[in-house]
Length: 296
Image (cartoon, rainbow, N blue to C red; front, side, top):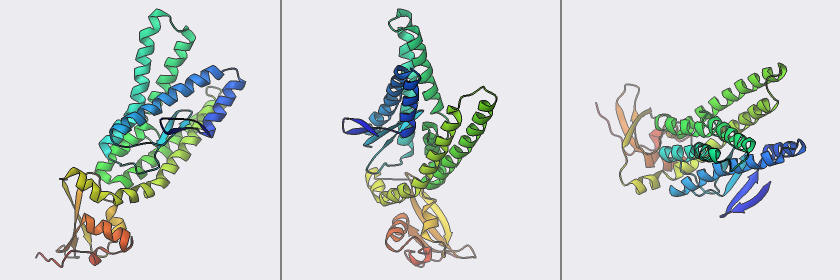
């Protein structure tokens, strides 16, 4: 549900967050819920401000109980360094808010119980988002790190898988805690939400990766010079399996070898990407090699 718009960015309440606010209102804690909303909003606003410095413009901020998701109608360039900095901006903002709250505490300008809640909420949201699993900010930092080694698609799948595993562990721990009366039902509900969100990130990875491939030439044009990354594959390997190994900020050269290990052809990154889109994802490497080189 859209609740407003700031600077062209739509502010949307996720149904889970809306339900949380309703429950807090019924229980007489609506002011606490509004403070939680403000903290989560500032957390996400920090993401968007830092992202704009990297040329990434977000169009929507969707708020969840533990944080939020900033999304764009356009393409979000998965540059690993930029993604890590953008992701860390949220938890860092929560840390700064905690420092500011501690700084004004001696002056008693804010009632103690409100200050305590503000500190606890910021610590909880900031630290929770540092967990290295999707869809939390820590998961995006992990994906950025893995992308340099595994490629964007496989890194996303790995981070999302970790997110689902952690969600299951959190759900089991929450269910046990509810059974023994040491935890509230919010914990297993949160685990369920994390599991669904991690799955959504995993499903969207394919679409994001295709858009990323479409911009690979622009990546070279913008950088001017990129380090080369060499891959080796048999001629019958389809291009869809080759592009999975493409990593950001590298220009790839694929050597086609025969069963004896001899190089029989060379395909550049642009050859592979062009074939991916124009000839089909199942096009074999041998159909696009530049020329029948042979080195014995």
